[in-house]
Image (cartoon, rainbow, N blue to C red; front, side, top):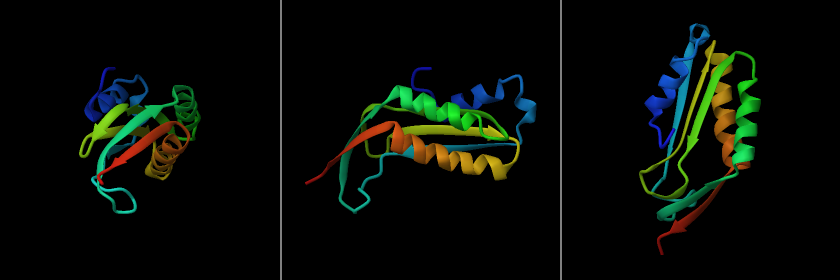
Length: 122
């Protein structure tokens, strides 16, 4: 899938044969923020991924109880303020199982598989 939209990812999940087991789809759309966590203006981010780690994290989280599907996409290369960075969609049976997996996916993918370099405005 070349640069999908979040709707493309949701449609992929909905097309699954076992979609009748899904009671919730929850999504994340990360974008380039105009300032760093310390408040400095950001010009852009350079983003790369360790594809093996990315896939390993997704496979581990897909095995969580109640999770029917987990799809994610990372926009790599140079991304400017306001541009999309990462889409994640998690589908599962009940929110008590789905919401924590979304949070784990965001945190683990960013910590374990995503490499980013902020270019601050001077």
